[in-house]
Length: 258
Ligand SMILES: NC(=O)c1ccc[n+]([C@@H]2O[C@H](COP(=O)([O-])OP(=O)(O)OC[C@H]3O[C@@H](n4cnc5c(N)ncnc54)[C@H](OP(=O)(O)O)[C@@H]3O)[C@@H](O)[C@H]2O)c1
Image (cartoon, rainbow, N blue to C red):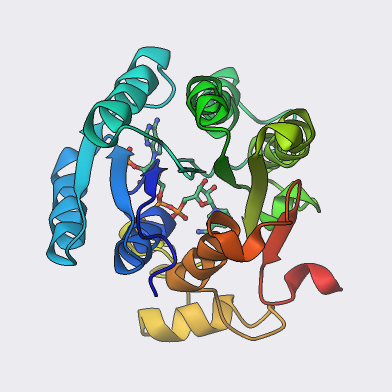
């Protein structure tokens, strides 16, 4: 039995990485999907892949830092499917820097998508879920929602906020049938890392060797895969986690266990 049949899910930032992997898994599990992102060519390709799995799926080009774009996404979901059972607030960017080295614009850009956009979508979707008397929100946090690291000050600030926003909303809406949780991935190898050439300036000759060397510090000796994060999102989004709310689910290969 598919875990999400009859349900409608919005996945923000589904054009690549964890969002794309989650879209494909949710399609396998029978969900009708609204997918978003700014790169329409990639979004349309994911839409087509999901439809090939036999589910209804629409891609809506949107920049979630803009409230009006978020409104279009929610309107499209309601117009197309009549309900919103699941919201996966996944869209986000990674930024680096320390408190004194971070430029104002980097700080604003990071907070705008990683924090404000989560609020935008929740503000618009929660009234729909309240009317339904049911709904699930999964926010994409990070292992840096619960521990800090170096030289990632704006990103850590943003993901720390996502963790507490998750808990606050879980408490505010627990009696209204709305569960709110966060998946907190550790380092997960996504296409963007390869596009940015993260491993190309390292000493080892191949990208594969460089990746192995870079991930050696992790307890399992490897990065996570987007599909492994998607599985955790499915758990939080499905009725399998019906008594779980306000939880930050670390999916980090043990990184924060030490
Ligand atoms: N990979 C990791 O190691 C890791 C670890 C912890 C947490 N995370 C979190 O996982 C989430 C997904 O990241 P990823 O690793 O899968 O990287 P990714 O492939 O770069 O995915 C980021 C997604 O967010 C979308 N996005 C970014 N800014 C947006 C905006 N203003 N409006 C709409 N969509 C926007 C991107 O779409 P467009 O570019 O098409 O707009 C893309 O689909 C992020 O929240 C990230 O912080 C990742």
